[in-house]
Amino acid sequence: MELHQLRYLVLAVDERSFSRAAEIAHVSVSAVSRGVQQLEKTLGVALLVRGKAELTLTQEGERLLPHARAVVDRIDRMRSSVRDMSGARPFVIGIPSVLNPSLPDRVVEILPSVLPGRPAVVRMIRFSEQRSLLVSGAIDLAVSFAAPLGTDEIAVPIQEVPSYLAVARDHPLAGRSSLDLGDLRGQRLCLLTEGGRPYREPSMGSPGHLHYDDDISRIAARVLLESAAALVTTPDIVPTARVFSGPEFVRVPITAPVASIVATWRPAMIGAGPSTRLAAMLDPAAPERVPA
Image 1: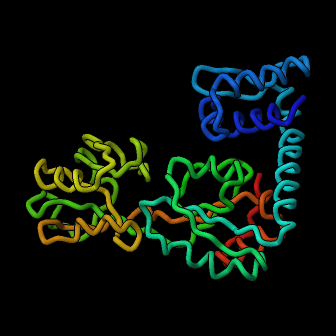
Image 2 (image 1 turned 180 degrees about the vertical axis):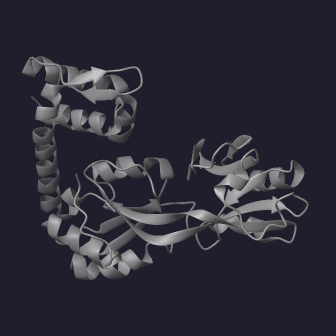
């Protein structure tokens, strides 16, 4: 039984997919699948049920998982402790390049009282790689739109994200003072993506058509020329959203649901005590957060 086999099992269970686990671990899908199969062969039991839609645990897998997770977390804490012995390893905060680089400022201000002696470094990353960088320890904390979490991660909202529907002035919704998600039913909506993956995947009922694009200028052109609408936020969150501040556009507030920028980290990498203090300082009104 080897450590990477246990790690692959934990990732596969958390993601319910060999392919997503492989993406996070930066290995091939076959490597993850083969690692779990070797673990099953060593133990002489099946650990996963490999369904068409997702992976699920067998009874034996359910018994093994907490032990596997404990081993992986202990090794991660040991590695973090060894790295910290120099006293100079920076605390790396990752933020997707589409976002305003000042968004982690609050975390940077709090950090000295949580982890004395750990200087903060902000690193611009791709939105799609934030989870894999957290799991590998390449970054200590991610600041981004809310994203699916593993069971060993904590996410704390640090700033609300206002949502708007950007439309041309002659669009039927341009005269509204506000909108809810039901008003978007049947609309042609555009969302900003990274490599085809939306930064935010809103639950918006039944839009008439969803168009994804990596280039916000192309989205703006589509809004003007094709009577489409773009789901956007403000330039202080996404600086390129200023393209919709021109007089040819109308931005109509969307009242619900409220999205957030969140800080996400793995307590196993920074320690239980610092993790608890960081969560409490970022959101004093929230109950104590403990990973499942």
